[in-house]
Length: 91
Image 1: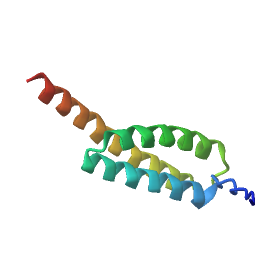
Image 2 (image 1 turned 90 degrees about the vertical axis):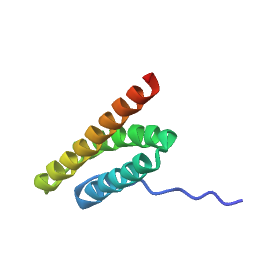
Image 3 (image 1 turned 60 degrees about the vertical axis):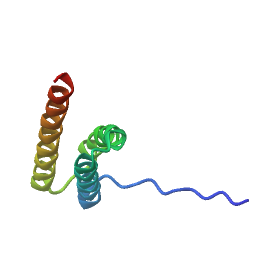
């Protein structure tokens, strides 16, 4: 049996931005599909990833702001969807 190490992901620069965008896209898909366990998992991943990217060195602050703004929009949609679900369940 061979043991292989998984390389540590890079969080600085475009690599970190790309990872945030990937999580954003996955979150959008999970919301569309109504896959709540996946939404919960991606929410946890997103929080940790944002923290790591913010603490990494970034050359392009504008790209980070744009990406975080996009994420904020997804979370706004998530909150609206949850409110709709709660309203629907209460009826």
